[in-house]
Amino acid sequence: MKTPSKVYFIRHGIAENRADHVPDEKRQLTKEGIQKTRKVANRLHHLNIHFDLILTSPLLRAMQTADILQTAGLGHQIKESTSLVPNGDINNWLNWYQQWRQNGGHCLALVGHQPDQGNWAEILVWGEAKEGLLLKKAGVIGLVIPETGDPVGNSSLFWLTSPKLLL
Image (cartoon, rainbow, N blue to C red; front, side, top):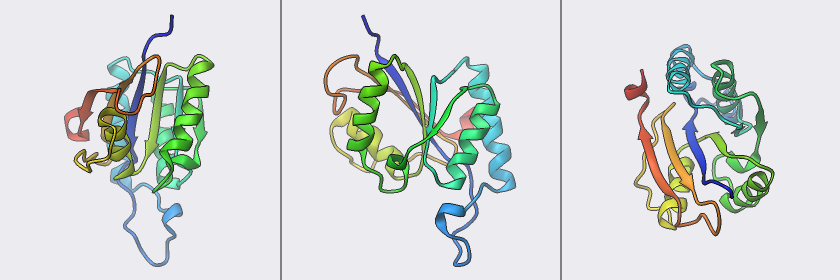
């Protein structure tokens, strides 16, 4: 019998400001962003959290965040997903997720962007995005996804933490 899976939505760390000379996909974590994200990752490690897979947006700041999570020992494998780019498609991700679960996946980190991360969590819990969950940079939302059936509107929120509480 399959057990419910856990999905952790993790927003990328503090990144460079938007500027005309830096394309959005090339914005990288700031020095402060790297330091705070490392502290959050180390705290998650001390809480014995481990991911079967770290799935990340291909944007540089998200990939850097995923690398920090991996370096802290939270997961061995990182994979990029275009579903996690800003305004990504949750339905594409849900199709991917069902396959991943069938192949034995249990605990997943999704590294991406706000407001998408908060909206996706709301869709999975309440069946619709209400734009009420604000995920701070390097913050974490944890959901339990049911083992069978449609996860949309049937998932449970078990964790919503700002990075300040993890530092």
